[in-house]
Length: 326
Image (tube, rainbow, N blue to C red; front, side):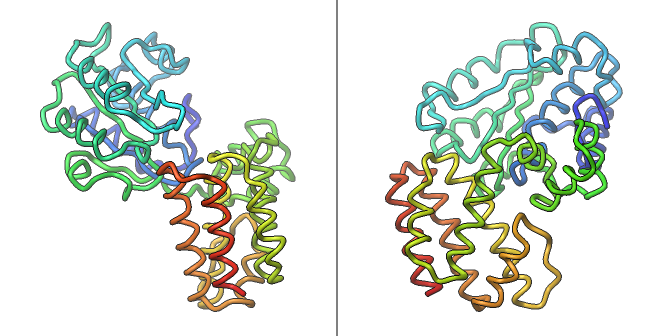
């Protein structure tokens, strides 16, 4: 473990450290992967390493620059997030200020680092605005984007960035992580069974956050499908109260459905937050039907990202699932 609490993904850390130590860092970087795998933490790790006073490719964690980075108050590490109520980036309010400010030299460190989180919330106009500065970046400026899905980034942007994928974490690393957070082995095992390869989601689950309820909602949806209970299916979807909650439920559903497909085709399925539900689903439906439901869930998530009315989108998804499964 390091001061930035990154577990697993040693390949990403080692590759970034080597690039920094040899002064071969690419000025525009994309870190992508499933929510909870540590994309934002890795971005902070990289930003700290770039400005660490030790200059050895990794953040020492003790110098003044690293301490400011650890406490998110470093003047040359700028976090960029959407300011709109919709949660989506806007060119004028969010991106133009970045592209203008990027040409101002760093305040006190060697590099000025912009961490642009949730790149899937950048529309085409925003990405094109960034593309211009990615093509001719200031010599002392680094851009780090994070995204759940690499495909949410335009091909023209991908061709200008160096991409790193955050991969699932080994169970042993998750166990160590949760124990160091003060949880018992029994609690850790419960969280790992819910989210086998994702320490961020495991921690949320044990802290009793929204994800605990989202897992329960996802299980209810899977149960309703297995029981061919259309009324219950519609009722559960109607109880989704926010876009964030709906998106998280869709992510959990996608993992369960993915496991169900693997089980139905005879493959060794990765554990998910509802293994019994995945097994039951694989017995009730053909793999083709499960794949269709999976695709419908992902389409619904994209619609919610694109301003679709939440109630309309969720009720439409419930109807689609019922039509496929029943």
